[in-house]
Image 1 (cartoon, helix red, strand yellow):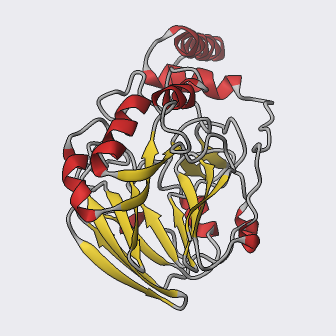
Image 2: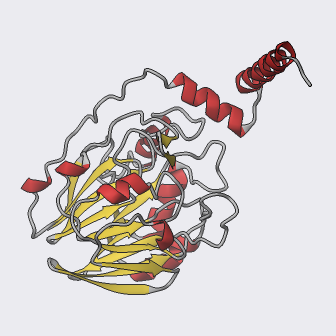
Length: 316
């Protein structure tokens, strides 16, 4: 039987080996551990702008970027929220809290400052888009529209309805504040939450109400599909991801590609999301928005917003 000394020596050697692996390995797991340790003790600054949804008119389309892929919209009185991530971490919801990346900037509104939501959109199952603590905290009793094969991940909460939407499918949503049509758009991405559940879907959305339409790109790499999506327009704006392309270019578009896809769809305004909120890739934090600004420098007013918490009236 091994002696206590042998047991301790073996344990110390294993611990030293694990520490060396975490410090030196280039594997995803080791990099994940290094990043989490580096975040210990860090504070998260507040967003540069704080929206005031209570001041928004119900006879306009008003939009605020709350951070990452979370967008709050008042669409002629209908309150819409996309892919909510309210809290300071995203990732696995463990009993000790959420294990995952720390925010670079706080969400522009905490859930208690968000109005009751009528329509909740969830584009796919990745942890930075389908965040279960945030979904549980969304105010109100919303109608929920999710990508195909993801509704089993919705936390137990009050909802008016839950619908899964595949590409080229449309659902008519009825709410006490009015109705909307939501159409699923094919994009270029992937939907598995834990790598093995590859059957899960992913989608973009067209939201239509009172003859006006918004295009919400979800997550996508560069694709010619947006030329075909033009037939669902015209769009007041395209809400498009512009970050996490280095090294994930096969799943996330560059800012230039995002603008080109919005152009192909015929969107009037460009709303950039999926940047400045979490460090999910290698490009510098400000690079995506700076490249988007350069791409749209000659189109005065087309870049709808630049910083977290900013609000824009898209139509009245």
